[in-house]
Every structure is written in structure tokens, then in C-alpha cells.
Length: 174
Length: 168
Image (cartoon, rainbow over all chains, first blue to last red):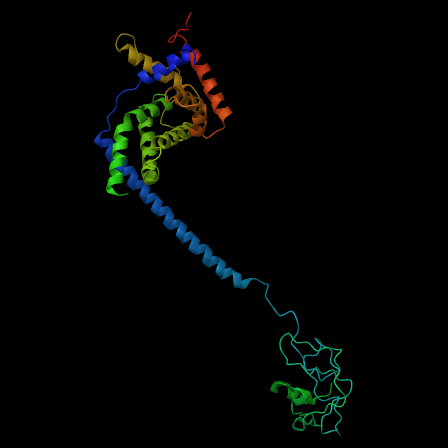
């Protein structure tokens, strides 16, 4: 620190005047604190309102998005219909392969009924699993030649039950 | 803030008011009204953080707030003042004391410095802060603070050449 810098520091200190903290200063300080507190409260309130509005808007817009979640695989289809291709014909085919003369409803050898098929949402028919030709349908599940098939087939260990809504459509010839 | 803390705050303000006001006056180049505004603004900010920093370094906090507020206010275009060719309140020799005249010269010279240079010089030579502390208060790198102080002092050497005669 050279001479000039020392003199500069001295001048700055000598220029200091004693200024007491007067009541008017205190009143002004209190007023400033109150004003700032009000400003902070207002900012908090505005922030909360904006946050709630943003969340509401977001929740309102989310259900309108075009993307929807759908199951990746088509609904399971009855496996007793070998002629229907999956995904092209929504109506199940119950009786075309059952000869009208066979009231027992025995399945043809080409049927690919999976004994473990329980019609769950993720179940798919195993093409390699061929039904035993000796399998016979439950006598209670006799196929009606007129198409009003009773939708119950007993296949070994499992019982395959078709929903009632499929019955009217099974009467038609594909 | 509870009563005890509020009492501590009032004591701090009463004890440091004069120093803070003089610091603000130097930072504003002698503008007394603006200096009071800056001190009030800084103390209001201090009030809201007082419970956290009362036991640490409240004066350093106020100083930093004051310096940054002074630099910010210097950037504003309009302060209700109009620039003139010559300062009308030039102290006349004989009707004021030498101390007042010297102070007026100092404040006028400081007022001609850029805000950052002025702040660096005041913190360095009036507050006796180290260069690192000056840099922290200004919120800039150490080299920048050093540069501000050096340029400010060089400019003051020119402005105050007739007040502070070189030795030898």
C-alpha cells in the first residue's frame, strides 16, 4: 500500500460522520418489513394458485391424449374352430367341422384344442398341441346339427365353455 | 421472529447504522438519500434472515447486499437527476471546514467511477477487506475484483492529485 492508498483510506475514514439511528429510521424500517412481508405473502399465494391451476390443467388434458393403452394380443378365441383365422373373423365357429351325424360331438383329428386352455386373457392356443383323436365331447355337450350347439365341451381334464353370446352366431355357415 | 431476536436485531441496527450509512454513502458517491434507501433495503432483507445468520456474520451479509444493491441501482437510468456540466454544490473555500471540503472532493471523485470500481475501492480501503473478500462481496472472480480495485485507484489518483500530493 503506497502513500496515496494510505491517504485514500484515511480520507474515507475521516469522512465518516456519526449518524444516530433515529426513531424515524426505525419506523421506516418497520414499514419496509411489513411491506416486504405482504409482498412475500402475495407471491406465495400467487405461486400456489398458479401451481394448482397448472396441475388442474394438466389433469384435464391428460385424458384427451390420443394414445390409449390397449391389449397387445387379440382376445382368445375358441380353439375348436380350425377354419377361422385369428384376427379376421371375430365370430367363433363352433360347429362346422362337427359332422351332423355325430351327436357325440367328437372332435376331428385336425382340431388343435389345448387341454390346458382356460380362456385367460393371455392364453394362446398352442399349435403343436394336437388333440387326441380319441377325445370325445361330453355327452352333455352334443352339437346340434341345426347350429344351436350347446357350448360346452369336455376335453379330458378341462372343460371348455363358450360364452352365451356366441351361440346365435354359431348357427351360420362360414 | 420472537422478541429476543427482534431485540438483538434492533441492537445490531442501532450499533451499526452509522457505519452502514457511511459505507452506503461512499458506494453511491455521496448521495445521502440514495444511501439511506440502500441501507433500509438491506436491513429489511437482513430482518427476514436474521434468525439464521444472527450468530454468524450479519454485517458481512448486509455489506454484500448493500454492495450489490448499490451496483444495481447505479444501472438504473433515472434517479430524478439531470446531468450538468458543473456540479453546483461545489464547496467554497472559507465557508466550510477543510474536512467537509475534503469529504466533498472524495465523494465527487468516487461518484465519477463506475459502480464496480467504486465498490471495489471502498471495500478494499474503507472496509479493509482482503481481495478475496472483495471478490465475494462483488460476486465476481478474484482477478476481476483485483482489476476493479486497481483501475479505480488509478482513476482516483488522477482525480485527487491536487488533494493528495505524492510524497517526495
